[in-house]
Amino acid sequence: MTDRLEGIEACVFDAYGTLFDVHSAVAQCRDQFDLAAAPAQAMSDAWRTRQLQYTWLRSLMGNHVDFWQVTDDALGFALDTAFGVGNAPSGLHRALMDSYLTLHTYPEVAGVLKELKAGGMKTAILSNGSPMMLEKVCAHTGLDSVLDAVLSVEDVGVFKPHPSVYQLAVDRFGLSRPAAVSFQSSNAWDAAAASAFGFKVVWCNRFGQARERLPGSPDIEVTSLATLPGLVGL
Image (tube, rainbow, N blue to C red; front, side, top):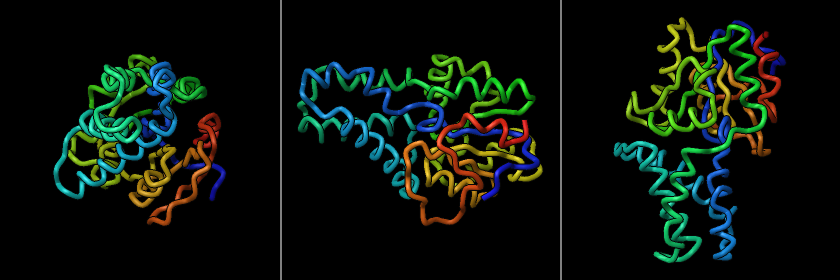
């Protein structure tokens, strides 16, 4: 691993789990779980796991729907698992879906993006999220003011880690080579795939994940995005 990335022209970020805390959706509805004595964190973990699995399975099946539908389907599965089929508290499904549009950012995120922007670095999100989802959560958190682009897989009709998704960032900024992108993700599989594509990758390993046994390897591993400006030469 290196301790600094050279020749970076754009910093591109995964959204969910990297900038936005996916578990903050359940946290916003925690009182409903407490009343039902249901395991909130276990349900949130199951929701996230199934959400990612459905993106990969639908991509393999050639049966694409947008991430809002995938998130809704995964939530239905997770609620049935947590409460029993059809036994979730009334209105909880809708409340959780609404909360996914008002996710919280991790503490350092806004400051890091502002510093990158002030230093003249191009910034973008590259996400499985649908345009509607990304527009709403970026507006809610104020990140829309510090991003040059918000890129969704809907432009290519397939989910990560398909290479055509990563190509969106190269095309958007008119870059001559993928290595001009510093790509940040907290998802180990996403970090590996982006590296295999040709990005320089900062793996924000917030959760102490094991390294994936996949093609590609991140260039730098951190536990927070706070040091990113220095890593890209600002």
